[in-house]
Amino acid sequence: MASVATRIATATPADRDRGVDALRALAILGVVLGHWMVTAWARGPGGTIRVSSPLIHLPEFTPASWVLQTLAVFFFVGGYAAARSLRAAQGRPAWVRAKMGRLLRPVGPPALIWAGIAAGLMLNGMPPGSIRALVLPVAAPVWFLAVFAALTSATPLLVRARPGVLIVSAAGVVLAVDVGRFALGGPAWLGWVNLAAGWLVPYALGIAWGQGAFTSRRAAVGLLAGGTAGAVALVVGFGYPASMVGVTGAKVSNLSPPTLAAVCFGIAQVGLALLLRGPLTRLMRRPPLWAAVAMVNLSAMRIFLWHQTALLVTVLVALRFGDLPGLLTSPAEPVWLLQRLAWLPVLALLLVLGLLPGTLRGFFNDRASSSGSSLSGVPRTRRGSARPGS
Image (cartoon, rainbow, N blue to C red; front, side, top):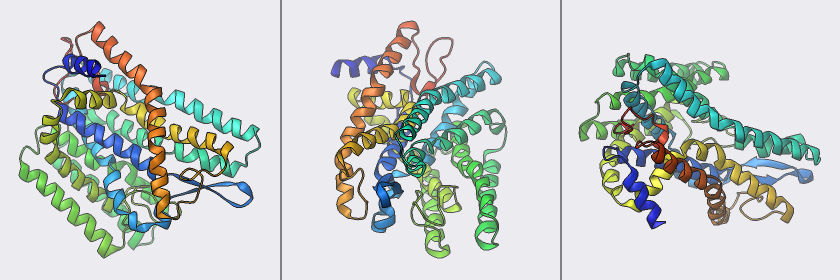
């Protein structure tokens, strides 16, 4: 492994912005860990299986959602990378086609697996409600990919707008929708307008960063302080949920669809990310750390698509052995969190065994055919080197 780490460090272009890659890796790992810790199943009446969440029974652990809900950082870094790589692209239509291919092609295999699992469970006589409870939490996060793909495809238009106007406009849409839903009693479906507007805010902040904004520490501190103050005010003063992830059975979710509280929280995360970029860049000078970050970046979309499948496969195997603690028991007691933590190495091993060989092969095959790097799906330039921070 030390040899592999050294080879990866040597193969990485000198102008690679490793701090940005580290932020992306932290964001995707936060999403994975968050899903693994809050996705729970328990036995229902008649042996059926129902979806649950530890946050239903253990609200005192809600602050964990403030750490593990890192989607805003992923959108922020995505906007930054898109703005930088688009600037170096030979043609914008070709850039969009290439981006869509890299985002959407990986969806096919896991979708087939999910459909096959559902069909197999149905043939074995499992009730439809139990099948839905098992498969839906695995497939549902794909909404993120759809939103991210839509924003990516719109990047050629978004970069032409004034960043400040774009960010304020998107946040204004979220505010108007929330007022319509919560203050004026509007229909619940109105909230889904925020699915695009809410995530456009951190994505547009990333575009602004890619265009040269937020160069001072004061700007980062301002985003962190302002976003934090806004989120706290909305939760404490206006009754928004304290959890920044969805809670099964809750009337209002900050995430599905995004609320103004989630947007403010995301702005705070963007400020924190900007402050962490420098220290992370220095840490990435260590080959073992950089090798791990490089592997996560190369497999980011596949990790996102497959991580819940690793959990589902583990649960399906566990069905043969009864109600194993931490997998098929109610998350009603604090001990459940410790039990689920004990399963994380198993889930991580399954995920790594499935993805690591292809990731290493892809990295070194890329290096053999060209001197460029394909970290995070960045298109190579004619000279074969990745643009900094792309």
